[in-house]
Image 1 (tube, rainbow, N blue to C red):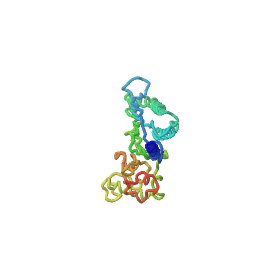
Image 2 (cartoon, rainbow, N blue to C red; image 1 turned 60 degrees about the vertical axis):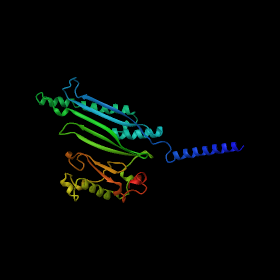
Image 3 (cartoon, rainbow, N blue to C red; image 1 turned 60 degrees about the horizontal axis):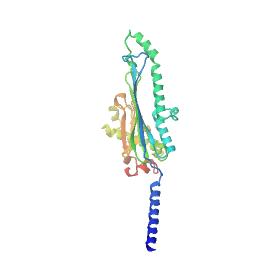
Length: 288
């Protein structure tokens, strides 16, 4: 009887331990936040004209769309995918489409818009005595990439470059940050105290001064920046363990020739404006 009693006691303890372990594992959100991804790649040439002639203008299109395929549950995955499509394609009409349908529609819309220039091409070619207007060779490059991911935060970039005639092409990078617990995008207001703007501006300016070896703010003008007043928080940032990374696109605070301006402000320099119970305080508390 003692052997049986010991056996049943051990069995109960083992069962209780497994239950407690299961509860601990599910505490704070339940299902795993691990995200699996897939991608769709498009690489094609879209002819401007109906003639099948590779010497005539075309647009070189390269698109890579990374999107989530596994995350928590079906509802959470659908919401996450919706954010990815919204930030990549920039139009709510794509929300209800599958990733492949969205890509097909995106390319179709671009193709129609490009081919609609054919009449202008013929008009301009006729004025050039048979020479081909070189500015009708277009290109479109769009892609997204994951920059940072942990159990609570996902930061990624959407890069867009194109040429649509003129002196040169354009390039833009836009960041999205997602709270994976709430499945909402993150803005500066979610990170900082209400009166953060002026103080964060000063921190960004000082980080740029260090980056460009400028002794005073006005010295940045000698480095090519437009005005000091142009340099301000623009909500185009991404987060990682190091700090908050801002990007200013071409012509935003500096000329085209300087490209995209990147600047990092470490969390250690943001302590006076970080929301005490905000995202940085909760998810990056060891890095402040």
